[in-house]
Length: 183
Image (cartoon, rainbow, N blue to C red):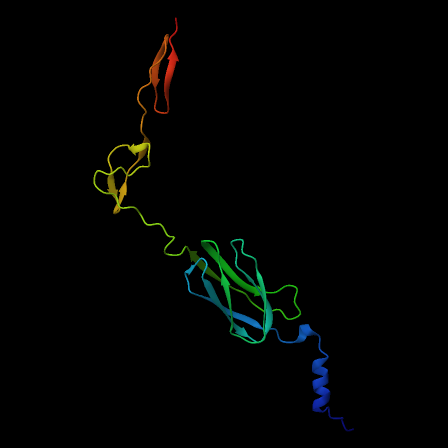
């Protein structure tokens, strides 16, 4: 008995009739960001590597909205600008629901700093200068610890107040005032 041969057109038609879930899914293999660390207000370029093509989500964390992307081929690059300083756990993962989700997921940590002009510098303390804010003074000696100045600021006491008749001036570590004298 002779078996009929299945030709190439019949095999191709059989492959096209397979459900979408039977097709090979793409795979996420890597995630990178440049520059890292990043600066607020400046674009960050993300690069996702993988194989095949698929749909995936990018979760930035830190209250940033997620993005849903489609890659017909890898690597895929895209940009994002962050408006707040912080440490973000950026994750690429299969998009759900999706007719063509990726397999696997990748996470990186991205630090976003303030621009250099907005970063505060430590003030230089000159000899004899009060390091405390207005109305305060150093309590005890100004010292050095691990290369930095150390001190404790305490409130500057106002001048002693005059108490009225049958009262006496009282001062404690957390307050002062006039107290009635028992008769």
